[in-house]
Image (cartoon, rainbow, N blue to C red; front, side):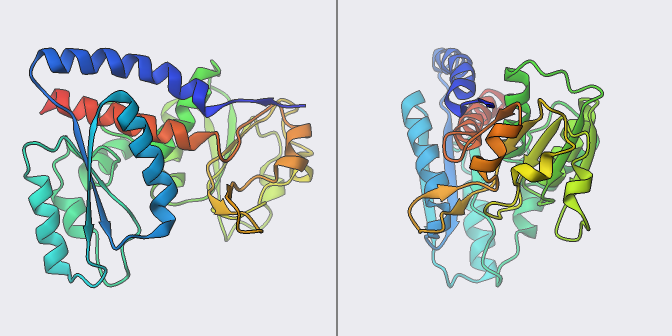
Length: 285
């Protein structure tokens, strides 16, 4: 039976530090504020948004949401983004992605103030991450995986890590972050021929493909016996009631050493890190 590592425990350890820093900000007359930008009101973002508002409200950090018309053109989107980017009262900016196919994120990624780019959307922070710099903002979901591993006091040096998923939000940045921690990393994706073979001797498996039930217990037959499986995927359950991850929990939990759940896992830590980054931005501005 695997140990279930709970997101609430990891998030709780981060929140204590955030509260102390907010007090220091208040003493300096500064205030942290997050502005979320959404094109249309996409139900796919609803769970993430609720988690953000809950965490920020608990910590006393202001949030604002700007919902732009779903038929907005590129110039209007760029103009609306610039207004938020130049607002001195805003310390952190989060753009819900992906944008509609008619819009490009390029202008926002090029022009966003790196100090407000709290989820590593901009090219400056992305390049800094790829170069292994420690002073940039990391994508919050990818960083949440690292925080789980550090919470469990896992030394990543010499560890074999398999990531399933290559998105610019999780998979790709996580590869860079893990290499910086001296892990040996394999990244699997839709063109990987035999994922089970890639899991041979895996010490850590991270699923971030957005595919319900992708990782099954039988696929870990040659993995490390105490393998830590971290589920980053978010999918609707087959019955349409609630969400689930990429890991088939029933078959995987009995054969791995540690595991996270969806819900109750990475999501709560992601929202907490977004709060930490927003406070850090307020400190820097």
